[in-house]
Image 1: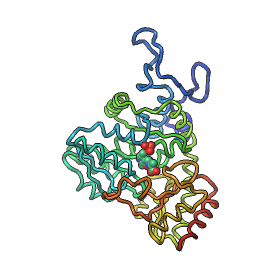
Image 2 (image 1 turned 180 degrees about the vertical axis):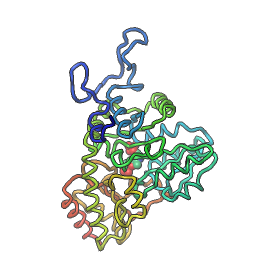
Image 3 (image 1 turned 45 degrees about the vertical axis):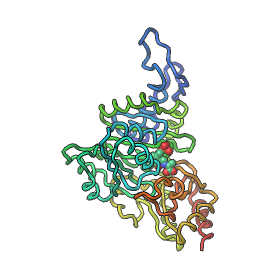
Length: 382
Ligand code: P1T
């Protein structure tokens, strides 16, 4: 019987513990495991290679992404790093032109030095994907919704384009903004899903982590090798925190989205707001695709105010409930200026972000309080 995601989020990978019956997966805070004889053990030898708390998290994430395999990493960037390490010098990556600044930084400042080629296109425009593919393209890497502009790419269509290539590249989707509750990239034809579990999966801004999910045994074996060989693994307490967050992912995402919908409408109608970005809003150019591909519009809203960068900074510094901070996906609302904060590393590149753009991670506070907070911050500008 295939279970619903709400049920899987609470139970997948988590049986009551055998020795004591503990209902919550214990934090197995051990680096190593006793062996009865040389090489005779209970499946765990050393915690870089495997740890029971981590195994529970990996099984849970695999179940949520309807994948065969899940792997947990020390951060979203560590997960991204492991996927890129599958490539060899001369390989090309076609990447989205509106990805997290740290993703671009890792590609551009590190992997380029090792002989990988990168080019960036707007993957929401299918022709740009078609034209951007090269004989050497091994990975198409994209976010949908993107960070920070919330552009939407039709995953099924991109997967179809890639399958028509003589040697189809892997479609890798960073599903951090949507989460598996809203969107299932593997079911739409992607080979690999990447997450920063720091965000909605953890959900409480108290842990940094990453994950990868895939159907493919071959990709899993390669990534499990890299996870162990390079060693960017999360500790058991961090795995426990993400597991605990995951249990409430569906309920949290529903409220994030209903709050964000109200905030997006409020901003769209506000005389001091020039433009808003929200996937399910009537003004979003890929709204139709978003509505077929995603369960709801998610919790992220970006917008531009009249008065450019200076006015944007005043608003971001003027809110009281929305905390001025990087990151997203926690229960509390956050506000930031991507151009100088999360995406500072894309300055001067084709991925450069409008300095007047404000990004909100809309939290779970009462939406009237959030609206009031934004209203009083917007009053501060001309
Ligand atoms: O921060 P870390 O867990 O390493 O995850 C990196 C990452 C990967 N992918 C996406 C889509 C992300 O948004 C991030 C991290 N982003 C922020 C910190 C931010 O505020 O946008």
